[in-house]
Length: 227
Image 1 (spheres, rainbow, N blue to C red):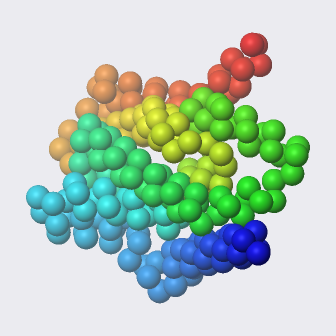
Image 2 (image 1 turned 180 degrees about the horizontal axis):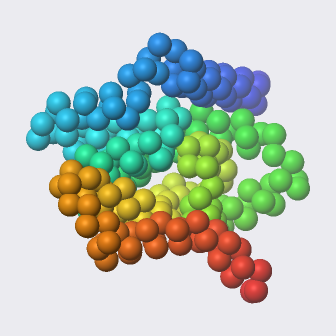
């Protein structure tokens, strides 16, 4: 009897998770609200917050992660508003807050169901992820595995929260800094109108880092293959 109750509870929570994800995708992609979720509209909303803009941005970013808003849009917004350095900090905080929240949602609503259907073969992988959670999460973050699906998906696995948190915190730093530094530097030159700044070392370095970021996944795979 108790097993049936647990199974029913797992199904109910899974249904809530599926409905949540479906509603989030509908809201962002198909509902009238999508016209307010552009980089221009969000930028105006955050600018209007004044001194509270950084805090508002962090919450907007976190909510956007859970609602499947494109991470590149949110990151570019942070870099454009706050510049390359503060932008990096606020983007990283927002991404961490959103990633943690999505993980908790996935863990609470979907883990019991996932655990109940894992067969003996998949259980070995699930156990391995649980034992090597930090390394697994770090590697997937560095190869730019799709951000939001991974947040929810990791919640369904056996990985411990703090392993997930630490792997994410470290794994997204490189890509976040490169992207915000590149966008923020270009935006500063655009505002100043000093187009000779396009030939500065800051631009060359940010462009080189931006291009290099696309080779990180291949370099990591090569390193794993040589072990």
